[in-house]
Image (tube, rainbow, N blue to C red; front, side):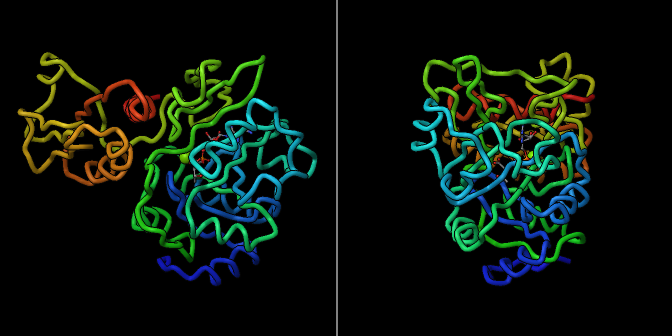
Length: 316
Ligand code: TXA
Ligand code: MG
């Protein structure tokens, strides 16, 4: 069993000794280790059961601090970094030879992010190395937004979970890069695509050779099958008594009330994003045959929510 606590010094000691610590961020909880230590990075892959082709994001408290790890940042991304870092934005940048290949899965680019959480920012500012931190869930499963989610799944593999409360944003960071004179979005996340300006194109998923495996067709998946916006014909295939519902702002008339979770009573997309993964998890723990999910308006954070729902629904 992992300990859940708020002891920053203890977390610091563990990280200095190449151990892993689960850390809070505004998006989801991360499984953190010294990004420059091969031993710590290997542990991350082992604990998550993550394939080595899936590269890791490096977390830092400031871009200056990791300047030796990346080539100069394109001007177009500097403006966005000023606006959204700290925040749910990850920049994919040309790396230098100081970044271990294990972190980038052999790619010449490295993902960098400054998480907007006071506890983790303080931890990062006390360390003289950056932290590699994927979401603290087994590969392919729903990302954790509360310490108990981490404990439930990785509690027997790590010793400490830093408790920073529930994550405010609730979906992962938006990943972007500057390529061919445009901003390419590799993963829709906490910064809405609309907020990145006009010169943007969105990379849709690819199952073969994905440039970001968060882009894998099937990801963030619960164990119980999930279907989105089924019509009445499709619903006939299921016993509604044994179904659960992940609703946006209104309950589903066909499904038992106790099996229903509302993302946001008032239809607020921020609140919906914040609740998405924890409600998905709660439904996954029920004794049901199927989760009926309702898509949300395709705007702002709704795009990231719909994207996660689609990947949770996809079977490979
Ligand atoms: O919000 C977040 O970004 C969270 C918190 C913990 O910071 N982290 C997170 O990490 O979502 P992870 O490992 O679960 O997802 C990172 C995504 C993966 O899909 C990975 O493939 C992509 O970032 N990525 C990382 N480095 C990359 C690289 N060099 N090239 C392409 N994609 C990269
Ligand atoms: Mg993840």
